[in-house]
Image 1 (cartoon, helix red, strand yellow):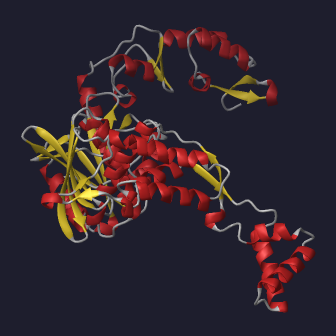
Image 2: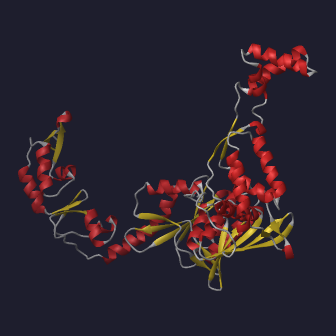
Image 3: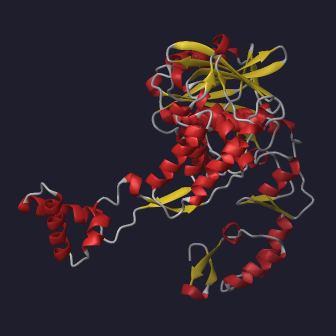
Length: 502
């Protein structure tokens, strides 16, 4: 983005359209680049004077300053002084107070005294005195990523972003709506989606319309243009607050707005810290639910809603959508409530910041409400998912045979559940007439009888484990307990089998 004082727009016909640079301006862009390249090793003041010469000869000084603004982001300035300027000034001011400085000769006397105190040359004192002023900083490095055409392209993108900074609302159509909505959410912008004549229009609330306009929100809002402009076809209709006058800004893929490779956008992983924190904690639980970000859109009357998350059940084609409602503006929250009311025939959990005081209103819309303060409680979400899981387990149990006879002598419940495509909780409810459940493993009685013959008091634990392994049994402790044995441990050397109770 550029600063607002560098904004160039046309207000002809009551509109509001950026005055983009064109191919004819590439020579000017090249000249500005050259001025910077030619002033490496010189002061900022000398650089500024050279740029002012270019401004006087150009048709529009704002264009020169816009090019310079973009190049300066790649420039490194530093203070060059033989002695720390602040240290010199402190000594100089004390010397001036002691001797009194009115004439040039008196000034030289005071600086000579400072040089003597600091064991330095008078010329070094003079060079250091005000070396940290901005206009005396030295351009020491310049890594310009732009050729003149690239600088023009970056300027046009930055100009359009600056024009959008004061928008109260932006309506966007895109041939790549999925990427658009994904970035809207990652930039944490307030938005809604409308169905219009078969097209989906993403309506993004601008920084000028929120309860407290913030530069951070405005910068994120303007950054969205980078994603919009990457699509093959797009159109933006924005309402701009032009110093109290509403004007319409229209940008399309026909405008010279493109996304240069020189300034990649840093992706934002989650819409907010609340979401990131919840996702991290939920995924660490290793439940039968997979957390999916930004699932498919849901129809909400004339609008479209993309929930923050969906919980997908691992053992059935079933999902529960999850929306986290934090604090924005009363108007935005009201739109969110209206959208939630229009979402039908889906299972939805809604986490609501308690400070909003709208939990009862959402519950009245037949969605399950999870109040939160600061962070969304994982236990509360787990508890809200449990009724769904119980129903799914019950359905899975009903679909299983009355009796299950695995063809393997030894099989874990987890492996058998995977064979039937159900959860372990569901498979555990079945009947197994030819096997015994030992811990979490089904074992034929013949196998247990064979093991009972091979194991006796005094058997080394390692030998017993070898016998179990030949049958594919991994839970040694559960089988030993079922056979009436325990392990008498002998330090790090292992243990010996003993009768339980001995």
